Image (cartoon, rainbow, N blue to C red; front, side, top):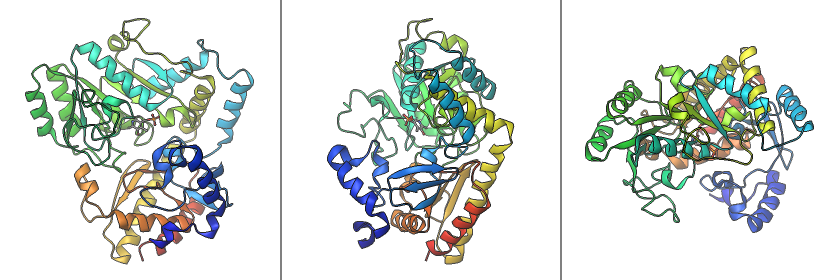
Length: 433
Ligand SMILES: *Cc1c(COP(=O)(O)O)cnc(C)c1O
C-alpha cells in the first residue's frame, strides 16, 4: 500500500492541487469516484484531452479508457464537435426559450430509438430517470418501483437503494439523508433474477408502477442480461400494466447504435438517455410512447422543468457527435477496439496465470478479477478488488487511464487505434505480474 499513500514524483502537481481541492470541496472532487478512494493514490488533475488521450497537470499522457464515464465516443475535442459548440456559443449560450437545435437532436434520437415517439430534454441522467419514474407513477396511479441490485440510476433519493454500493437489503437507503420512507416504495431484486421479480410482483398487492433496469448493467461493472431476462421483464410488465423503463443513459449508442433495445430487440415503454447524447456537454433525455409523454407538462399534468434543459451548446454537441458517429462508420471502430482490448486483457492475464473474466458489450468493458462469469452484483462484489487496485495502478503508471474502481465500465472511442493498442499491450505485459 505504500505506493498508494505517497504521491509518485510524476504526480506532484496533481497531488498539490488535490490537497488544495480537499480544503475547498468535499473529498476534493465534484463527484465521488473521481477521488480514487477505492484504488488509493492521487487523482490526476486533467489539463486537456486530445482524441484518445488525456494530459494531466504533471504533463503525463494517458490512453483514456474512461472518456468522461462514457460520453466521448468520438474521443476528446473532436474538431467537428468543437466547431459546432463554438458556433452555437457565438450565437448565445442559453435562452430559456425553444431553439431549432432541440428538434434536430430529438429527430436523431427518435431515428435511433424507434420506441421513442416523443421525448423531453433534461441536463443529467439523474434528472431523466427521476422524471421517468414520476411519469410512470402518475400514468399507473401506483407507487412502487422495482429496480435491481447494483444498478445505478442517478442520485435521486428514491433510487438510492442498492445502487451499486454495499447495501443489498430490500428498501434500505444507501445514503444518510435518504429517509427510509422515501425508499419504502423501492423494491430491489438481484440482476438477472426473474423469479425474484415475479415474487415481488406477487407480494405487492397495490401493484408496481415501473420496472427500472439498466438493460446491460454498467454500474457494477459490465454485466450482461442473461438470455430471456429482458424478454421476461417485458412480459411481466405487459401482463401487470407496469411501465418498463430502460435506463440507457450509459448503454445508449454504447452497446449498439440503437442501444440495448436495438441490440436485443426489446421495446421498453420509456427510455432514459444521457452521456453520449450530449457529446460531452450536459444533456440527457427521457422519452417513449406518445400517450405517456403527453402526460408531461405543459401538455399534461406531470410537472418537470429545467432552466438549462435543451441547452443549445449541449444540443449542438449531441447533434455533431451523432452525425459524425453515423456518417463515417466510426462506431464499428470503437467497438472493434473494445473487442481487441478485451482479448488483450484476457490473454495477458492468462499468460500470468491470473484469474480474469473480461465482460464486454459493444464499446463498454470490465475486467473482473475472477475466473467465473459475473451475472449479478453479489458476484461482482466477490471479485478480487485488491488485485484490481494493483492492476489499476500498474496500468496508470504505464500510461493507461482506467476507471478508478473495480465496479465500473471502461469505454473506448473512435479515436482509439493501433498506437493506443500498442500502449495498452505494453502496459498489460507488466500489469499482472
Ligand atoms: C451515469 C448514469 C446515470 C446518471 O447520469 P448523470 O448524468 O450522472 O446524472 C443514470 N443511469 C445510468 C445507467 C448511468 O450510467
